[in-house]
Structure formats: structure tokens, C-alpha cells
Image (cartoon, rainbow, N blue to C red; front, top):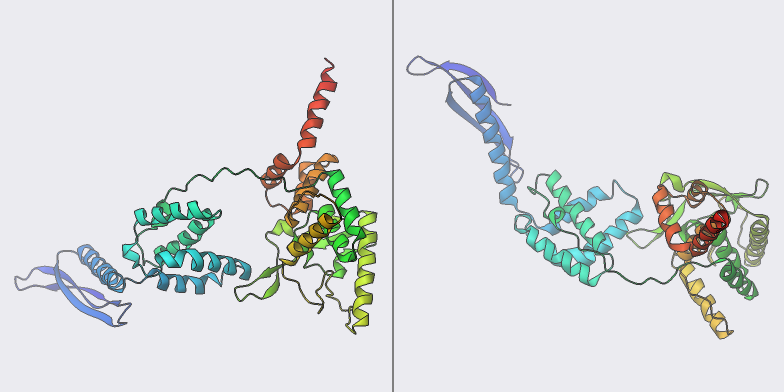
Amino acid sequence: MATFKQYKDKDNKRKWQFSGYIATDPITEKKVVTTRKGFDTKAVATQEFDKLKASILKASRNRRSITFQELYDDWLLQHRKSVKPSTVATNRRFIEGHVIPKFGKLKLDKITVAYCQKCVNEWHDKYKQYHYIRRATAQVMSYGVSMELMDSNPMKKTILPRRKEQEKKPNFYNKDQLKDFLQFVETLDNYRYLAFFRLLAITGMRKSEALALYVSDIDSFNKTITIGKTIAIDEHDQIILQTPKTRSSYRTISLDDETLKIMRRWINIMQQDFLKLGINTSKKKQLLFPNLSNNLYYPQVANDWLDWIYKKAKESGHDFEVITPHGFRHTACSLMFESGATINEVQKRLGHKDVKTTMNIYSHVTPQQAENTSQKLANYLGF
């Protein structure tokens, strides 16, 4: 630590000096020790000391001039300590697949706003999730600013291009479509499919939440099901159980009698099938929808099941509207509103943190509700 003291110069005038340790060079890890004299006041001496210390550290950073790849490697170590494994996996896919090829070899002090904007525009032209790639890149650069390796974040200064307008197919079923779909699924030689997709359509849960359920999450006496975990893929491509997206995603919701009946039958079928294989299903954390080894499925399996169902339907002469597993969540939202449920009731059942999310789905999937509203107004007016 430097010390400040007063002394008399050759003209017998009182002056100030500082001497001792100033700073440690981050690259060489050598301590910088020096003495500076001739300051009229202690305040001036202190000011000069601070300037000297800052110049040493800044010069070291300039000399270091690391690459974006080196910054990313450091950021990733820190990132793993602050987010869920699935988030790490997602960010790695985006950054290593799209960002590193463009920024990896660049020195941090050579990255300009203009270059960043060029990359954002290219991502916009090629990828639907261009905004996510930009955001992930900005996260890494923000870390560089926090670590004082970058003076500013050029990616944050870019202008995000407008989303491309694309005509989207409806991703939900109305009441009649859902009834026809489930009736067909019931004819197939796999009761698992009926149990799984009815559960999605009635509860509105996400496929990753359904695949994470335990048998014990169903309370037949109180006619409820508890959703408190989700499956995900970590950065090593392993299936894991983790906490839900938000605190609001923890929820216990009611089940109707028919769905409970179907769940009980599926559990019985599943237990009998595993008993024949000599696999114990009486454990406390028995999965509701396990794979053939009584372990977790990959999330993609729900899409594979649905593709197989549509294939069988087409072979049988059925022409169902094709939706995704997430479309059953939108279906639940739509039908709940049409049945008279309130916004708050739907929000809590779906586990949305923000009511705006519920409203966004509502505005896209409730044409029948809009027609009903118009008719209600006409009936009320009477002219």
C-alpha cells in the first residue's frame, strides 16, 4: 500500500509525495512499486496516485487485448454458476453455432458497432431466432464490460430488424376437432398416447412438464395433479429433471373425472407391462410416462408420438389439422375461455407468470369466443 507524507524540498518548501505499492499488473502479475514527489497538497498527490494506478491497469488491458473466444470461455464458466443447465445448453448452441464463427478470432478492441450490425442483419435474413442470437452475444459482451475488458458493449448499440411477417397456421384444436382426434387415438394400440395427449389438452401443461410427472403427482382423492418439475437437455446432451420455468409454473390444478379415469387405467397398464419385464414400479418417484427402461424420455418423443398418430390417421382416411404438442396447450387455453373461465383462472392453470402471455394466446386462438361476444352484444341490443 502506498504511503503519503510531507517533506521539505531543496528550497525548504513543504511538498507532498507518495511511495510504495501502486498496483499489480494483471498479465505479468508483478507488483508495481514507485515514488513520486513534488505535489503542493495531499489532494493533488492522491489524484496523481489514482491516475497512475488507472493507467497501469488500462495499459495492461490494452496489452492483453483478448479475443472474443477467450472472453466467451471465461463467460461460460461464470454462466454455468448462475443459470439452469438447460439454459447453458441453449446458449451454447446459439453462440457456438452462430456467434463464434463470426466473432471468435476477433480481438475485443477490434469489434465495432458496424460489424455487429452487419452480423445481426445476416442473422435476421437466415434465422427465425436472430433476436436470441443477438441477445446471447450481447450477454457475453456485457460480461466483458463488467470485467473491464471492453469499454462498451457494441452489440447493445445495434438496431434489431423488424420481425418478418409470416402467415402462421392455427396451432390448436377447437372442441369438435379435439374430440375427433382423441376418439381416433383411443382406437390405436397404445393407451399411452390417449393418456398423454388428453392430459395436455385438459390441463394445458407443457410436454416437458408432462414427461417429468410422477405417478404420485396425481391425487385421486382430491382430483388434482401437481406440476413442479420439467425435463430438459443439458449441455452434455443428457436428460435431466429441473425446476420449472418460473415460480408460477409450480401449481396444483384440478382434474375432471374422465381424465382421472384414463390416468388410472394408463397407470395400471404401465405397471402390468413393467411387471412382465420384472421392473419395479412401486417406487416413490415412479414416472407417469417412462421409457421402456423406466427412465426419462427425451422431450422430442412427444413430437415423434404425434407424427406417428398423424401418419396412422392419414392411412385410415382421417384428415386432421396438424398441430404441435405445444398446440394442445393453446387448445386448453382456447377451450377454457370458451367454457367461461376467467383470465386469472386460465393464467393460474397454465402457470403463466405474466397475464400478458395468457392474453397473447387468447387473442390468437379464440375465434369462436369472438363470434360469441358479437352475438351476445346483438342479443343485448335487440336491434
